[in-house]
Image 1 (cartoon, rainbow, N blue to C red):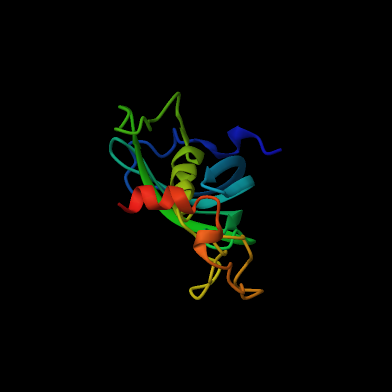
Image 2: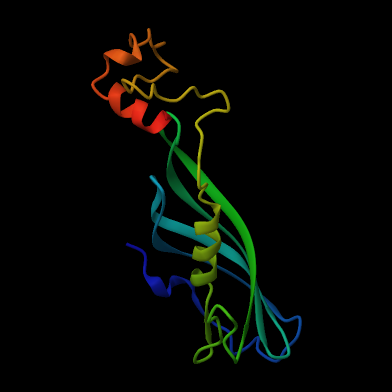
Length: 165
């Protein structure tokens, strides 16, 4: 497992030195879930730290492997998610709580936030996905459903009449 400290970077040499730059890279393990889709494992982050008058600015790219689940047919597939982001770290925490702490910045925290926003809320395996039959659950992409007889044959048909009136 990756160490959380891989993306906690010392910045004493950059703070108060506008435009002084340094590259960084590292990885941390993340566990993110949106619906049935998830990212479990290493998130790789690389970028540049640039000194500012009051702190540092981090510009970064992050990527991680996700397993997405189609909201129509429930098929799963792997996909690499990639995001770009930027975060200013100052002596006073911003609205998200990011700040310079003991001469370091944690670039992994805002990168994790950006990656979580990149997980699709309603992923679809393909634009023409037909989904599942609402009656029997057959995957309509693989096997066309032959129908299910008259609705009145259902033991729940009487309940539908209650709601339709």
